[in-house]
Image (cartoon, rainbow, N blue to C red; front, side, top):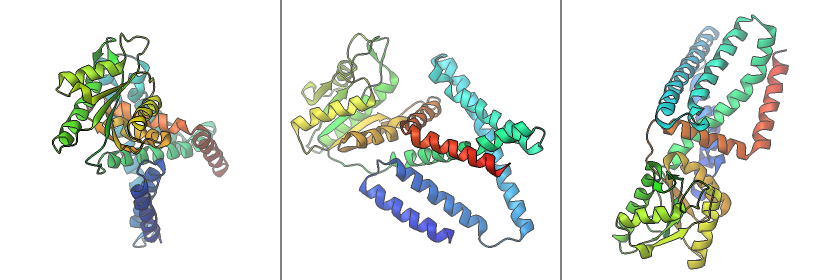
Length: 330
């Protein structure tokens, strides 16, 4: 039964990816497929009760060990982030997430030991929402990795580069330079085929910046050998959504039936793709390299942003699941 259900869900997943890969529901369908396959492998062939209990305990032990390993990895990464990037709130995210995982495991351990009725109730309320959020995060992570490897159109009309802030108010930093270098390589590869695209540098001027990000990005591309007449500047946006909306306006004015590719960093690809779909941009998103130590915290931030984009649904489900957990363990 579970095998047939997994096959059906996977078929729906494949169809939806072909129709439009820029959907978060694709990530959920992929997660459901993996979950059904796992359950199918677990229950077939039928095991005697003693073996089933042993397998269940082994699975729980594996989950706990994995969660502990993840917690310590995130805390170590958080310390590295603070040392290299400073103590800004965003740089503390991996450290705090690791501590939160340890705290939750301690809560579960105390609840299982049955030492406190209050803690048992707290664990019963918190476990289902934590499971839901963890499932969504794994879906997000797995599909984000897959989306970044999907094939793209070889020829496009525009390459849009999303800005991400200037270092010292005027200089292109490493994250942004990686985006620009990826965009330049895309430009050169298509130009070699005789059809050079236009590049759109997208980014306005922040309160602590001396010039619009678009101007600094264009200067970086010109210095790298891109002809200045192949660069367009969108210098008013402040957010990813504005980046895409204002760049879309530029592209539509020049070519109503345009096709484009959007360049950002790899940790930002899937959320940028979701935003591109929501804003009606006709193109897929590709990623540029990011330092390994920076990637975990940035990925968690991206997931939180996607999760909170639908606050009523996600927070409402967390509350309902928590209440159901309380009722089940009364």
